[in-house]
Image (cartoon, rainbow, N blue to C red):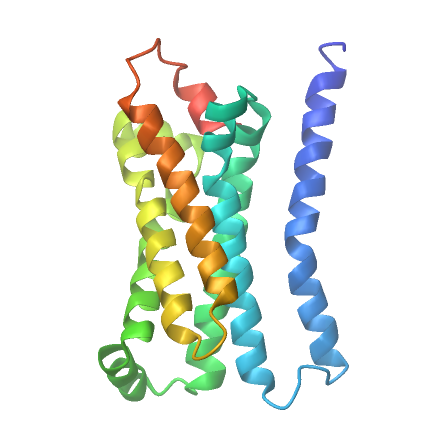
Length: 212
């Protein structure tokens, strides 16, 4: 493949993955326009936005374990895009909770965060994602320095753990979906831990780790 064709293929691949990540949001908007969100449309929209935020966050976190296991570098190029899409869904999930579910009643919102543990932990997960989104650019990587930036972005795993716990505590009966998320996250963490325990290898460099 020529040097010109490869960047074009990479851009098209990113565009395709980005479009796929937005499909659930478009489908949710279409269902809303068709009044097809069920008996409790607010709860359904909140559930769908939170669900896809977690799916995309785990997909972003899967890029490095896939690289470790397979040796493929291409998943790393999608990590930032998937992470930002996860943040988009999480922001919409949180914004809808504030604006539609709680009608901007910040007194009640604070009481809810303090009183209900699944709200508390979901709020904490969202807060952790904010600095990761803000520092996702190449410019911020240079400004922070790669080692510091890398340590900061390990918070993504903590955000995912809190997100899964939020989902488990939110679901009252059928735990199959949250447990699947918990299993996938456990596998991703296990791969990272096993890799950290292996003998040191030559570093791949910031560019390879960040993905462009």
